[in-house]
Length: 420
Image 1: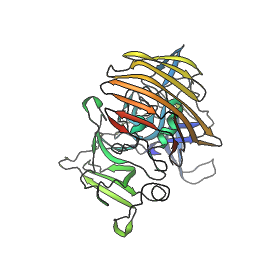
Image 2 (image 1 turned 90 degrees about the vertical axis):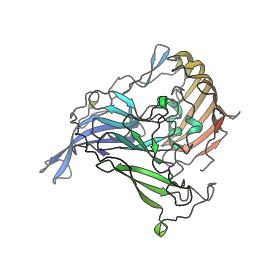
Image 3 (image 1 turned 120 degrees about the vertical axis):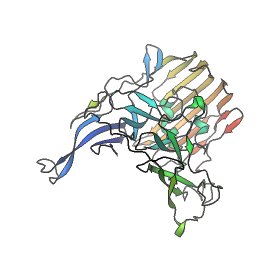
Image 4 (image 1 turned 180 degrees about the vertical axis):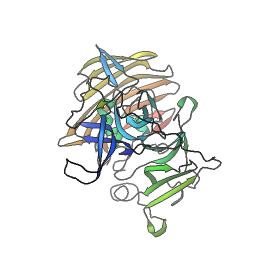
């Protein structure tokens, strides 16, 4: 749940076995309630919007037997907050590239979406500076935690229809996160110029207790001072069961005062001129591209893809032959490219299953043999018997048989060791 800069509107997400829904609403003070179980002065939530529309074009859809990707879907995943002025909602969404989980911003009035991060590593925590010029994100970039999955750029997100729950769960090891604080400007990552922000805690020797000790990892959320000159974030030291026992990582000994396993970090932005908060954007109570959601309303149904045989054409050239099942997908790429720079050939297929009533425990069988040419030479391959993994998205303990390895220009990215 996140409060808008106007101190009146809020955002929240609701997670169930049927998926995730996202909402906005307005806080209205009620001094003398006449209904409800709590009849004392309170805030009521009014003008609720669910951030979706019935029959809107989904991120991936079919036009006959042709598969297409919607560049501006109104499909919001986990909400992460507001921009500094409150004119945009920050959130996770359906991927643009296979296995690459990113942050997006959508304007509350126009519904125009933009991609904030594009680095292959995983991100979700984000806060905006009050002047709306910077973001502080917590990201696994630099750890190589997700590169074995997401390191190959330019693959369309077709495989994600069955593997996303696995992909978003491998970023953690139990309670341990692999996040580090990254400072981005308002426009976010720009791979065309090699801009992926600035990690703010690199000035250390990597030794135990240092500012960049890899065993200390950032936790959500960080923040900016009101004038933008300081950044605060907090970290947790890796502890059992994320180390020791069956985990191959030995547990470190805290060097913090009193042997603490948590620490708060304050960074000063050298040479930064203090700034004033930007004017707060006055958002409408009714979001034009959303759906009003009064008490008793039902969640709008989204169109879903039917099992079948489809073709996805690259924006630049080539195509992908796609076969969709109820819980499986098979893709064969032929000279596929969306940008003339990343050319994909080969195949990838996966099947997933969950274990009701625990819909967060997923098993995935994955087979991949992809070759990339063009700007880089890369491969994304499973071992001969395939890659077979099971993980509970609420617990995040990685366990797999077989391997999935991505290699880019000779650099090999390996999956985590089991239980690590």
